[in-house]
Length: 93
Image (cartoon, rainbow, N blue to C red; front, side, top):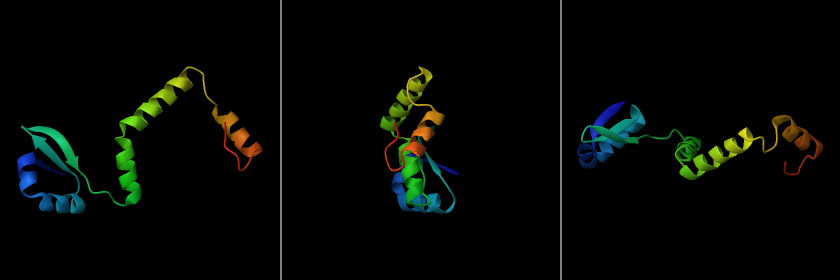
């Protein structure tokens, strides 16, 4: 993993992209503080995982779902799979 200032990355972006592909992430700093990370995805699935992991909308949806489950709302694991097995080809509750 390399660490580089934003000014240096701006001046030599191609080199840092190559470094991210060949040796791993590059931490980009501004005034000595990390502000970004340059990461080369391994494949399309990895890119999708990276993007979704940073999606505020998805994180909000997941947290709302977790809160709903903690409150006793939603469908339990066994109930979900019982429904799936009883009604193949239809959507679970």
